[in-house]
Image 1 (cartoon, rainbow, N blue to C red):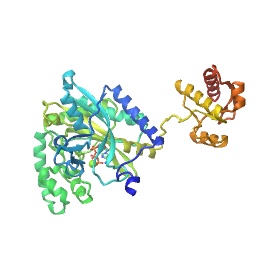
Image 2: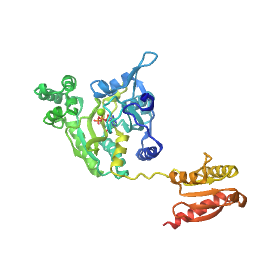
Image 3: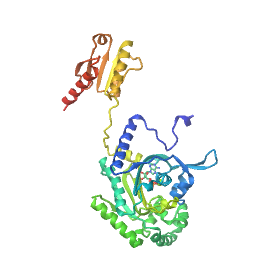
Image 4: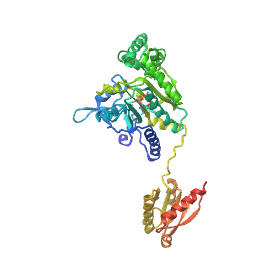
Length: 430
Ligand code: ATP
Ligand code: MG
């Protein structure tokens, strides 16, 4: 029976106390994205399987091992999105958004699904904030997208996040590099893991991304793409670095970053941070100049990144970053007896309508139990209504922290009295 009382492996519920943090970080993403001119795109949670086979790439771990793919009742193969780029690019093409002027800037906040070995920071349902820029091959666009990523980490005051960049060239210069890789890894054929043997044939660059210790030790000595870049790709990379320097963005060049998706070209980057003792990518992306054409559109340069929301939250918690959440309750109105209970409810409604977070008893509890609950809610103020207060049309507003009391009207002037009293007390606390 555990099956219906436990969420599926690799998924997480978000309860109200934690949802507040999600709302805050999502708010930061939305406002940073808007500031940089990125508009939100929302795409379906499932797409035709072919979209990801093409858009993510047949030789990737995602497509080979991690996708949630099934036949719908009409016998069509559909897949829960494992990442946000393919769907966003499809939507951009399908609706001809490129006709509205280039570049097009999209952002998304979505759930993603990958059948992974679930562990801390690695889930089967996780969430990404992503940014996409279509229609510019200019190195400045690379710098702009990277800057959006780093500005988000800055907004949270996260200092432990490092930016690493690399260039993986274009299909032309990469062909020679792949040959060199095949030679190099071919000589280590006996030591490679089974998956990497397959990668050796299909896409040897994938071996550089293998997480097995033996393969990564071998990969450390492999030829570097940076030594194989053609003139155009080398110039592009130099210009990206110049633009980052000009913007004061710190980075290191890491020649072993290759990224997990097939469609990357030229610039690739990762924002890394120590999470739970391991170095993990919180945000990763790059340029994918071949993707739009691969999806059936005209040839159009593009780039973007995906930022893992759960990993960001782990990092924020680990670094004890205070997220300025709102208290769930500002005032609790306790009551004794049915007429007072109704009056409390009516006053709450008045407060709600003017944007004050208020709460009252809906359990018919005694006064002591009500005040205990008010404490649990973290209420800053309380008001107790009984027959006497109703008869007098006045009650005492109590500051739960200082104990200070002040009589306020329960009639027409209630809201004015309340707001005046609260404002006066807040002013005094400074
Ligand atoms: P990794 O190398 O850690 O498997 P990846 O290369 O598969 O990452 P991307 O496909 O580039 O990751 O996804 C972008 C970001 O999404 C990652 O940097 C990470 O923050 C987050 N992410 C990816 N997979 C997961 C997952 N299974 N659970 C939680 N977050 C994830
Ligand atoms: Mg992965």
